[in-house]
Image (cartoon, rainbow, N blue to C red; front, side, top):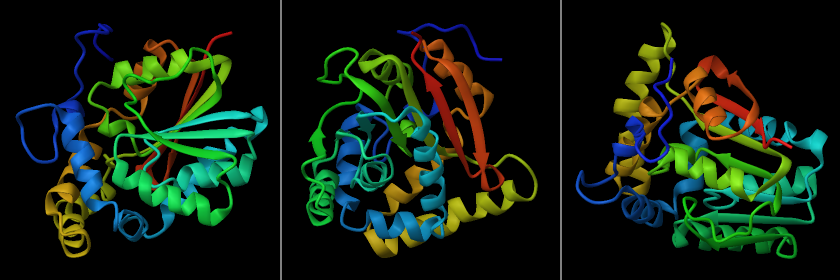
Length: 256
């Protein structure tokens, strides 16, 4: 059972986990971290998930297909992989991707240009906790593996609710830490030992790939996350697990 909802007070464990230093705000450190690993992020992302993340992303996009959204916002877009997939599968008129990291966005813009989708996809630097966007301006919002990096989960969800149109859809796909034997033990070894080692070898930043599994384990998941999304103001909130609990798709709607 979740504690009572207090918008300005609630703190979730993953919000206190920072990449480099316990002191200072989380957001600047996350920006610094992703700027530093942008050159190797795509390679490591697919390598560390053995490519299964592509299947999870497709399932998230498919969940939006019945609603045919024409204006889509991709929050924490990173290098634009999810934005590109969404544009190809749903063919919206416009897709805006936002992210804190200019390094990641620079990589993403090159990918968008190469894909010939610059007339549909725009990637812009912005803070997901203070979206520089009008109310009720998007039909759908997506977040792929980004909410665990929010420095204020409740505020981020309320901002997404604000810019969604009534009846608009939310799709969040997020990594999770399995909690049942034997996947819990296997994943614990992988996350604490292998992931930081591979991250150090490929990206040269051990801290980043120690931070990421730590936030996965700390981020609310399952029914707890469903309750948090619902208390932010969404309805029709559902959760669907993938691959023994390694990833979860959360879908929701803004009330009419």
